[in-house]
Amino acid sequence: MMSPVGRNTVASEQLESFISRIESVRGEKKELAADEAVIMAEVKAAGFKPNLVKEVVKRRAMKPHDRQ
Image 1 (cartoon, rainbow, N blue to C red):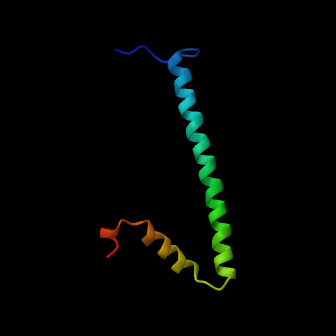
Image 2 (cartoon, rainbow, N blue to C red):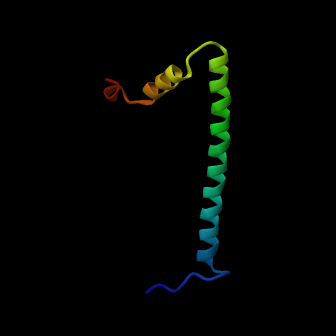
């Protein structure tokens, strides 16, 4: 049986590090989503259809054998 994780232990410091990293990545994802929204607004302002651009991006991300 494992001993419980308490304060001021190596395990708690490691757990806190994991949590901080996850929170950081989530913050970055929010920033990237906001950036993507700005780009899509530019796409629309330029006269392109955002849904079609999203579809092209989606297909380009697929592996060649999955594109059919």
